[in-house]
Image (cartoon, rainbow, N blue to C red; front, top):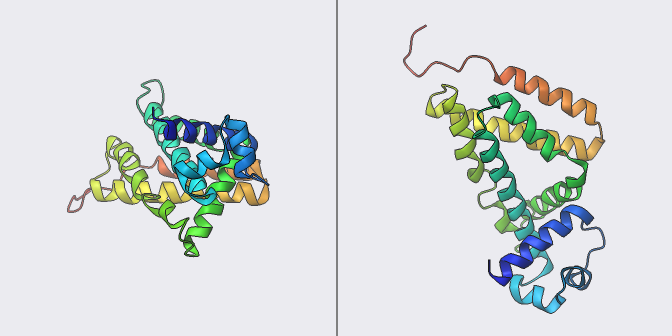
Amino acid sequence: MDRRGELLAAATDYVAEHGIAGLSLRRLGAALGTSHRMLIHHFGSKERLFVEIVRASEERQREALARLGHDPALSPADAARSLWHRLTDPRLAAQERLFFEICGQALQGRPEAVPVLDGLVTDWLAPLAEAERAQGADPATARARARLGLAAVRGLLFDLLATGDRAGVDAAMEEFLRLSQTQPAPAPGHRQ
C-alpha cells in the first residue's frame, strides 16, 4: 500500500473510533504520526480527506457484504441482519454521522464534497442486485429491490442517528427483512 493509502486507512480507523467533532488536521496528523502538511499534500484539504474517508468506509462495508454473501452458513436474511448489526454498531456512529454530513454538503453543491456522490448508489447496486438474483429475481426486479434495500438501510441509519431509538429501527429492519423474504416477482411475461 502506498503512503496515501496507509494514511487514508489510518484516518478512517481514527474517525471511526474518535469521530470528527472538533477534529483539526493538526490533531489528526499527530494521531497518525504525520503532519497536517503531509495530509494536505496527499488529500488537498480537510474536506477532501473527509470525502475519501467516507468512500473508504463505504468500500469496507461493501467488502463486508461480499464476505457475508459468500458465507454458506448464512441465509440472505441472516447476512443482511449481520450487516445491519455491523452498520449500527455504536462504535461506528461517528463514521455514519460523517457520511450524512458529507452527503449533505455535496447535495448543497460544496465543490470539495461533491465527489462523494460518485458511486454513492451505483457502487452498491451490483452486489445487492446479485444477491437478489441469487434468490430468483429477474434482473430488473433485482436492481429495483437493491435500490430499495439501500434506501431502507440508509433511511434507518439516519433515523437511528436522529432519534437514538435502537429498538425502533431494529424492529423496522426486521419488518423490512420479513417483507423482503416474499416470493420474487415473476419475470416479465411470466404467467402464474
